Amino acid sequence: MKDKLTIIKVGGKIVEEPETLAALLRDFAAIDGFKLLVHGGGRSATKIAAQLGIETQMIDGRRVTDQQMLEVVTMVYGGLVNKTIVARLQALGIDALGITGADMNILRSDRRPVKTVDYGFVGDVKEVNSQALATLIRAGVVPVIAPLTHDGKGSMLNTNADTMAGETAKGLANDFDIQLVYCFEKAGVLLDENDDDSVIGLVDRDIYTQLRNDGIVVGGMIPKLDNAFEAIDAGVSEVIITKASSLDNLALGTHIK
Image (cartoon, rainbow, N blue to C red; front, side, top):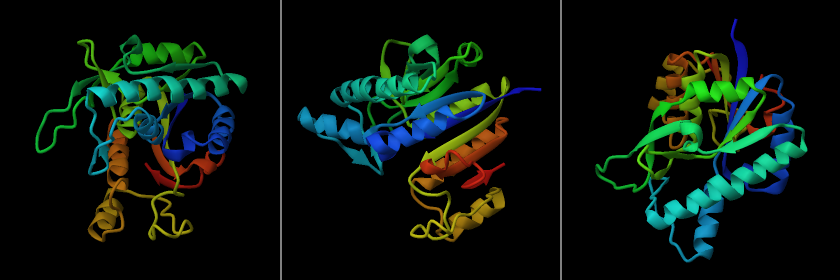
């Protein structure tokens, strides 16, 4: 029987505002058994870039990462946000280790090819070093992974945090019984985006297709659900999409099995 591993992905203002971050980390620390955290930090990167006089360019909600922006996100994601989370987890008695995909070759990517848009130094994950991660986890370490990978040729790459969480879960599915949880500002997948009480408790492929056809699931929720079903196909036991404040009650939210 495999040991259970809970992988939490969190981003947005949750990790960038002291009160919401403190609540999240308290709930994360209370999760039993093996656990791993993947975080974002895009708003902090945008803020620091502006302070440095570097313009942020977004296309279809995705950050264009030129050389200057790559330096900013490496500093902010791998430094400021990551180490703040690690320090606060240590204060809660969690032996956390902050890493990027480059550390121990955990996550290697290829730079995204140019099609209609050149996103710059953005990585698409190609390889997960599951053995190294599993060794850390079984040694009692709690990895805290920043949304940065590397190309194996000496370059860092900005990488979508949702994708990193999904790929990490898929890579570790042979070693652990994995519950993957995407935490964000909403209570789950909603029938009405303005009504947090309209959570759809269970989504399977047929329901997902219908929700997309009806225009209920749109925008950023589409890649979240795509990542979720890919993880299920790769052996992840369960994916949950829920509000960060519900981390202490994972029966809530939207469940994909």
